[in-house]
Length: 305
Image 1 (cartoon, helix red, strand yellow):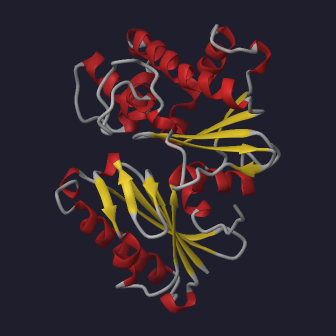
Image 2 (cartoon, rainbow, N blue to C red):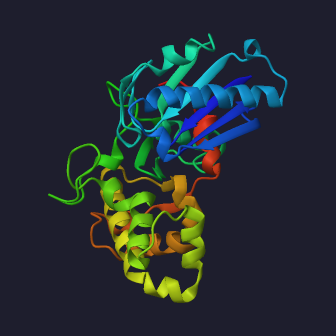
Image 3 (cartoon, one colour):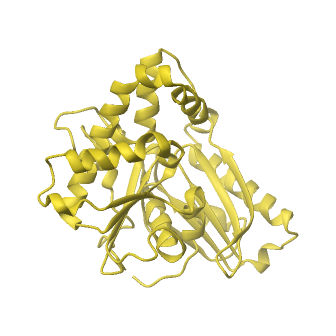
């Protein structure tokens, strides 16, 4: 038995996973604004401990029966530390030692997009592809790349920072301190904020924004926002296509919940866009099969670099 932990910019999901890679019990919690304080890292650990305890209690399982905890983090990590997670406002935090104070079992720490990509390759949307790009498009943007069936890994740390690829010189300031980063224009957070500005509302949930745009009149009013978002997202994807020429791009994260509204438009824009060196190289654009469970499942999959 293993436990997978997927930490997002606004949500934590925990899953108890059997030897077949199936989630048999699950708990989750939104990360509200109160958590985003100076001691946020410590409160995050408390949340994880509480959720792990709940998921174990659900199945009457003792922690001694768990052989591994996997943790997926949106940012740069080492074997033990969150080096930098901009959307969590955490730097140089030894999360492994903190959790080991409560649960003294092996812990594996990985980049969240990498975890999700590993799960999609093993069980989901990337299973039949050797050359693929996986993107998590949510609060921020993360990514992972398979070439020749092998997962590319940066030399020093876990994960590629695709969300911090610059698509607009001297553009909007990002949480990382630089300007014009991909995720400031093409994350779901950016899309939701733009929609709320258009309708002059605040603090809408993703579901409320989806319901708002399901109305034809509202959708027409927001068409310029949708078009601009698709333009920004397709610009970043065009860069990735030019570099890697993947067979497929699979998108996970909050984007999945807006699939009907955005996916066909994105594919169409890539075919129209005059940004690809090889216009015949537009890959298949799909969404993650495992949806929001991909990070949980991938965090505990054992693989060879």
